[in-house]
Length: 404
Image (tube, rainbow, N blue to C red; front, top):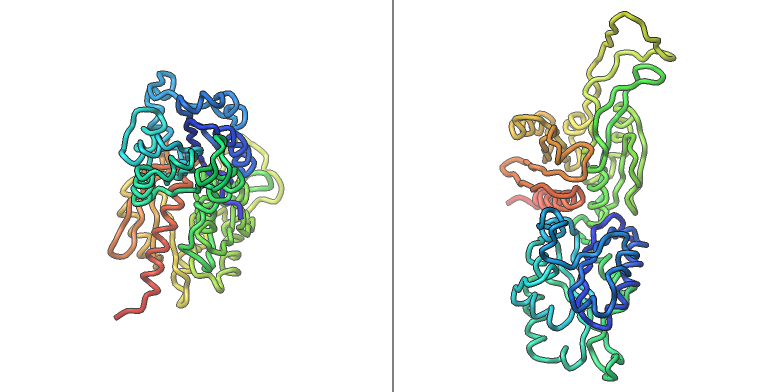
């Protein structure tokens, strides 16, 4: 299963002859669908030129801590927020010591401190340097701080020595990084996700819809699949690729979406209703195309079916997670919606703000359930989706736990 598609990987390269292998690693990451940004230390540039990695990644290579052209001199903060994973390959003994002691004297070490993304390191050094007690103490310190160590491999080294210290091969690094995105939070569960807008016909060429891009719902479906779930995605009209390993069903109207949800509800453990469905639909649809005239035009609307409310009223309903997009009084309206529709959780976001919500890549959510809430701060929708899936897993387990 390829979990790398669409992921943001920040590759750090430090000084060492193994830096030449990192070029092939970048090529494999890009081939897997990942977006790659490369950060090189001064030592790394002595072995391989930044131009090589710019050509392979399709993005400029970063190497200066104080770069006036990068986000008004704060480029390291932007990179730190951007990354889903930070992988340093090769990682020299010197850089391992920097990480272990929290130093920040260049771009790569600084962004490692400034990012909340998981960090993985692939050591590469002489076998005696790897075996040195100081290096081993630094490695243990990194592991205690949840930094994952990939390798090193054992074999013949450039200096002629034989032993542990070789950087893992690019194919193995790609596999390990791919696995880092997989978890078993929802292993074996069946999850139904709705996403995107609906379209309600006015005539043969016009319709009522909304600004939903479907990005949040698709990110949730992908995150649930990463968490080991069997995911069915019911999607309104969007221009998005189906997440790897997800079964997708396309619909257009709210009635079609509702019928599809009810048809596939049996055997589902969790329903996540992130679709922005129409609250009102035309009472009737004109057959053919209405011609323009000088007269005012009135279109009569009627309430649409309320999918989440109907599911919430079912006696054996799955664990239900709804969404609320509000422009004001977010908590009040979201909590009211959750209670009226008997949902286990609701994820609310404020729309009408340029940097989040509809038609953009970032979002923030406030998640509510009976007796609790969780704030998911502004971040890329892929990150928000993984955080939301973790909260859903936590709440689902609590509901399933026997009382008493």
